[in-house]
Length: 493
Ligand SMILES: Cc1cc2nc3c(=O)[nH]c(=O)nc-3n(C[C@H](O)[C@H](O)[C@H](O)COP(=O)(O)OP(=O)(O)OC[C@H]3O[C@@H](n4cnc5c(N)ncnc54)[C@H](O)[C@@H]3O)c2cc1C
Ligand code: FES
Ligand code: FES
Image 1 (cartoon, rainbow, N blue to C red):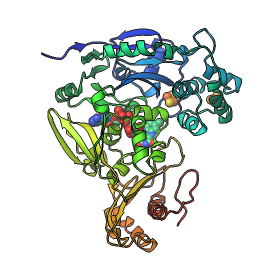
Image 2 (image 1 turned 120 degrees about the vertical axis):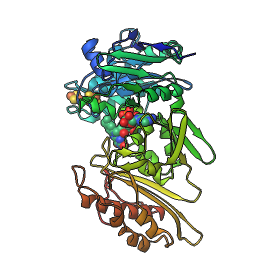
Image 3 (image 1 turned 90 degrees about the horizontal axis):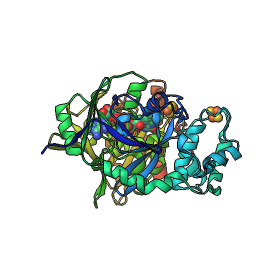
Image 4 (image 1 turned 90 degrees about the vertical axis):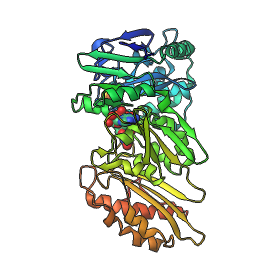
């Protein structure tokens, strides 16, 4: 029997159930809200996921419940919202027409001047308030990494965030409706496929991973859309036609994380936010590293599979995952194959992926006992910036302190994420000393010929990479390496 097919998406917008069949692939949630629903509380600042003015909450089903996360409506497509609950600033307010505690705190602490960023900031803080009303300063700053305010200065906003847990408004709408919404969304997740032909092209939402495989066999030219934190910009900045578009962000089978004694397997659809706790707990430096990918909204949407599949030479996850020895599993039709992650990246813009093939998962081995590992990101801004250079190091020593294994990988140094094979070779068999490291630093010139661009010059990239190796060495010796707040590694060591 064939799969059931629908020609509409179903979602909840604040308190209303919506059935929508006119869903062009490139229709963003922000345009839908502002232009079709005339809900203008949600603002457009940058239209590229950077400023957070468009922040809304999206409630989505996870394995064991319903979670509300902040997302950027400007790069979120309507086709990705089937069986979701969209919550905008218009929905905020106490149960009895009083201001919500987050709003009240922003008023009390003068957190708004021109007000343009304010709805987005309030929605980010609302997402935090739902989980942790009395958050500490680091968590508040992490929550607001993706919200830019030009007028107020952040102190007033941070004061409001610190105070929001102290106000009682007599209840919250999302808390009250939680179970009913979860049940409604679960009822809609019936395994059917959405297939809509619109004036802007075809939208497909598979009912399962098997259905995704069938759809991609029939439409190998389709654009796979996961978190849309890359694809969104193809539309808003490059006016690219993404039809037919296949939305996969809802597929629970691609969102699983499984642990074995050897390692973790992350489904391609696992978001940065969902992977955070494992990364932070099991791999040294990865908690801090992970927190510097995008802002909270981008981490709530963006997936590990999307970061790998886009093949960018400056994507942040490939270098550490390659250094850890990760392998990638792809599927086309019913056939799957697995390859070392580094082999996936063939050349600039060219990956080892056939039309109709998709990334299923990435397997990341656990760090063996006694081995050292670190990943570093160098960018102009500390928060929400793309890497100029991203480097990851893993070494094992034998009983005599000699390097027995070295895996080093960099982004930003070549046309693809790439291992530093010459540096690894220069280290293996040598004592893990400052002198050996200094000697091995020269081998970077054999491994890489970086480019100069607006993020960094070739000379900067080369020097920074060499210095990161020395930094890694010093840190393995227990030294706290002094770097600027921006974590740049310019100073020669
Ligand atoms: C404001 C902002 C900040 C950012 N900061 C960073 C950063 O600090 N570091 C960083 O590395 N990146 C950053 N990015 C880029 C982006 O967030 C990541 O590359 C993200 O991981 C992409 O995942 P996605 O799920 O959003 O992919 P999408 O945009 O949905 O897709 C990206 C590409 O992968 C393909 N694809 C997605 N899933 C699959 C699959 N399962 N199988 C095959 N193909 C697939 C798509 O067709 C597309 O070609 C940023 C983006 C924005 C907008
Ligand atoms: S409008 Fe700037 S992040 Fe969406
Ligand atoms: S209050 Fe004006 S941008 Fe924040």
